[in-house]
Amino acid sequence: MAALATVLMWSSAFPVTRFLLGYYSPGAIMVLRFIVACVILIVIGVVKKIRLPEKKDLPVFLAMGIFGVFAYNFLFNTGTIYVVSGVSSFIVASAPVFTLILARLLLKEVVRPAVWLGVAVSFTGLMVVMFSQTQGLALNVGVLMLVGAAISGSVLNITQRVLVRKYTALECTTYGIIVGTIFMFIYLPGAITELAQSTVPANLAIIFMAVFPAVLAYISWGYALSKAEKTTHVTVFLYLVPFLSSIIGFIWLGETFSLWALLGGVVIITGMIISNVIGRTKQK
Image 1 (cartoon, rainbow, N blue to C red):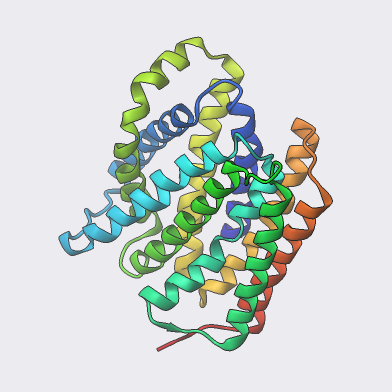
Image 2: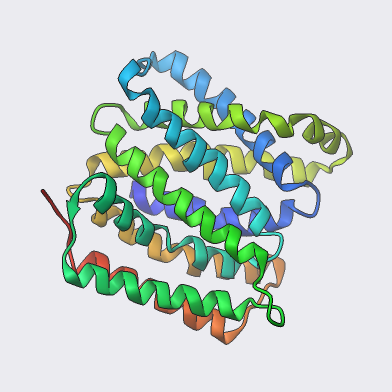
């Protein structure tokens, strides 16, 4: 249930971000959203009396914050300017593919041949989606940023996988988001100016993004990872995100995208199913 709740919250992030880009710059959305998230998490952390991270684990928290929170959200918000939410969600959905690669390189997981077949299929789908977003002979810069976001999201998965062995989901989320938010402060001066000129619906959307796709989603995802017998039992739910995001984007924002983009997205998901269902990873 925790994984399904996370998927529902993350699915809403794509169309809500598209909506917010009509009122705020990408950096302002990011810093305002996570300042609110930090306040909520610090209050909860004080009440729950969460532990401080051990010194030896600080590099992992630092990597989680820089790549999984700061870099991911910057690349995601900026890339979403150029790509509709349905297409962006399919691209970001390739994160589990990059997670498999990093798990092999960093965690020394043994990967079966069927898994690499799934990776190849997903990359083929990713190429189709990227091709569907070309403008003449120029590749849409938003697509490249969203691919970067997918890679950054895979770092979040790897670091959380390591940290939840020792820390609670709340502890992982709190310290990772605090680190990421510190790096976002470079956008705070501009965000304050934009906040004064924004509207009530846009500001409520910022609060929504802080409470649900940020705080609650990160905590529930970490909880789901900590309780799952295998990581793949949880990541399988991520297959639903692009389809739910596309539905929300169509109903709320009237967004549509090409048949090629849809085809490529389906191929990406197919590749991940091959990797996670047919070819299970084994730990050395």
